[in-house]
Length: 191
Image 1 (cartoon, one colour):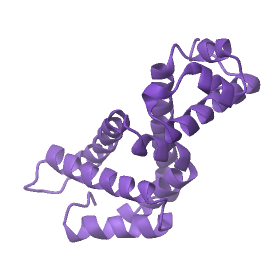
Image 2 (tube, helix red, strand yellow):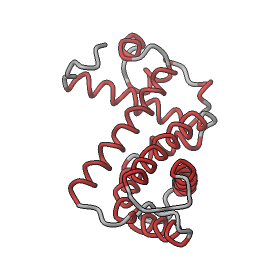
Image 3 (cartoon, rainbow, N blue to C red):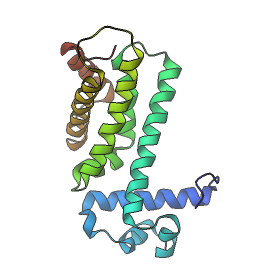
């Protein structure tokens, strides 16, 4: 399927139903136990429809991850440019709100045995964005930007895992403020 083609509403709804069914199953059982039949049954579509959109369950997993990371990037970029961000805490609030809104996806990705694939992609995503932010600053520092970005990304992803695995015990605003304070206290904030 050509990704440049605009999807009509029916196609978008079908892909959404398949993705939702897959994520529900992913949160209930091991990835190896999920079949295309299970996904099609849960999504209320036939198997051929699933194969029309995805080559297999691995492709479906990859596309789910890719789509959510793209949405996160778009969401964060939109909020950053719209609000004229002045602190990391205000940048983090929309991130935690996005995670909260997409709880099913992030919960499934972080609580299943295939979490390493997602965790790696999330770490790469966060690290690259932090490094870009650090590189854009002109401040003199003794800390290598690459190492700082890796450290911050690992800390952030660890906090996100804790928050998701514990069913979001705190609201996004609180999480953003706490993470900001942790980064600030440890003098690792990019601002």
